[in-house]
Length: 445
Length: 190
Picture (cartoon, rainbow over the protein chains, first blue to last red):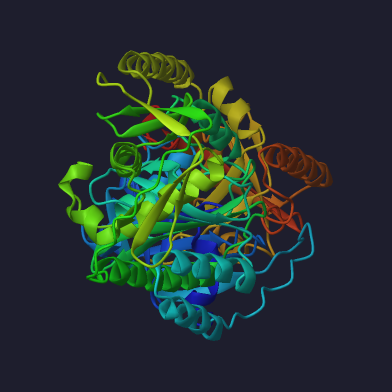
């Protein structure tokens, strides 16, 4: 083989469909389009077997096939002479291709049409460049080689050096933004007791969005969370109308949703799972208004950083807080000004003066803090107490207290309302009220 | 997700259209390899065209065609292929050989595959070369509306040294992605 398959990985993204041609028993050619060619290694590719039963029949009988792939950025074409090895209808290769296909199909509104039957593995006998006889445009300059290892090492070392979840999140986002040039980046945290992820930190968007939720399995981020596999969409131009329509349809569906930060016209998106000890801890998402902004190298880079961040956050959660209990300090309730705090126990949602704030565990935590302040004048709480104090009537959760408190505190900061949370020291929370709360509990759902 | 009733309606509409299309093919069965007006209009519009012929014992070639013509009198489909860009297909295409071609609309993915036997090969005439150039410009305009750039298509539409490959259709298949892909609409008259 004269050309490295690894150098053609941009041609396997499915931006421009690939083509496969086979022969039947009479020597009759058959042509099919392919939505996805998967790079396996330097001598193998896998093809998505969806509808092309004739192709499947032909290659299983004869073995050989021709494949043309196109680089979606430069338009360069290559022809591969391939030989069928075997088909997989389950396993890692199938799962990877199924996930990618589902995400791409959803973006084109064809999620119920493009179903993967099998991932077909082929050995590549030969790979040749197809020279353009009359190119329409000059070829874009080749992409420069990347040397990311040093920068990844530097950022991961920096994340690992942090001893608090909050500074880990900031270190990761600052590094992605400043060192790697990801202009729009977001971290979402997964919760073991929830079927959604919550945005906890972002860079490159207008302020806001902390606490915005993405349901697992929905959209690019949700699909990555469900599959625990990285996904990169290089060119959203053809899917843009559909994406816009979906965005319109999902805007502010009810009064308890925080809009997720996002570009109005994204052309390239990448999301990677944050995994630690086999568990999903969250998702890192980046996007760009430039098609082909992210390459395979970015996928690898983000994956390594996501793994470091997930492990560091997890370790931080597991680390037992200092044994000393917080001295019970009391403070009088503010005398000037009043505000209304409406609390819905059934979903933990909290409204401040009819303005939605947050729901779920962070909402329950906040209600518990304010209730304790109103009843006992108490304003200091330790993580250890919060975990164990049944008086707070918190749900039985074990993980993610630290990140949920960060999420709550940042959401309160964004709203700039009468409630604030401070961290006087590690493992401790202090409630600040600038007005007297009138708590209203709404029992019915 | 579409409501169940809407899905059933769409399926029923598709079947009705399919039956009509098959009906229109049946009417043409008596003519030598005739194609319906609907199919002819499709394959001579701004569609992406792929051609394949046999190359050796276990492999088929792939080439992109720069436009198609239909000769109603003879029932031939003619495709234009750039010899320097797709030398293998031009080399292996011979009169009497088997050939396949797909015709895919880029805006809605509606696609047909026609299989047949090559009846004539020769250099494209000046008029045919001009017609191929027109096809390229029209198709580029269609693709631009869909957000595909000239750079992305820079290697796709080759116009140098076009060779005309004419073939007599024997079989017509639906190639549109979905469960009907591969459905045969047409067979040669017995």
